[in-house]
Length: 285
Image 1 (tube, helix red, strand yellow):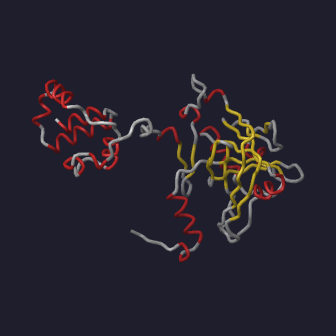
Image 2: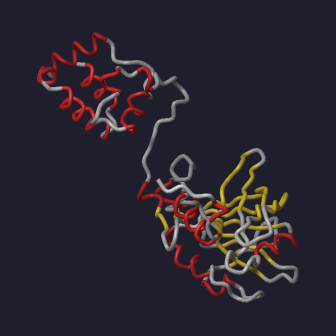
């Protein structure tokens, strides 16, 4: 394994490692205005949500690594204490990328990238009409993490109004992750289209999972079942009852004639198809 002391390699190289390893990252498509009222629009992938009461978003227009200069977005936020964060989906990803071009101060990236400026209800910066969700925010604080190139500038902002396109909602009024079709940033030129990689994991909140330590040793030490497989097996409240196992083997007598490895492969197939209880019955039969 390559072990690195961050202080012993160039910042540019460290920056590349960080962006490639901590990915995919959501994108804050930040709209601001300068002190003269000129609009600015720029994407940032140092971004996430950090609370719901109050609703807090944090993004960082970091100092440029190459020359230690700062972004127009940071200057505007410090001057006006307002920002709109628009989410980025697949329909606008190419235009979003174009807007990241370092145009001179005062150039309107809405126009350059072909976006529609939509007036906000509470703050002065405009919303991106084409974005499926837009957050109007007031800036609570800015935390400067350093003075050299690559240092972060954490803009802590509170959502004062949000706008959600009805086309991305399901029948219950919730955001449908497939309809919203979000994209995320990775290292280099790479992006990720979120809906192509979604999968579900049941959270062990309503029932207490037995834990991997309670899985019988021959199963836990399997050379076939993966750590993910064991994690799914351990996220059950209890093992199948003896009667359930008897009923299962009566219905599937061929299972009892399989070797341990064959049972593990078969159980793995059931796990892949989300049949966890059946996988347990195969393993314990």
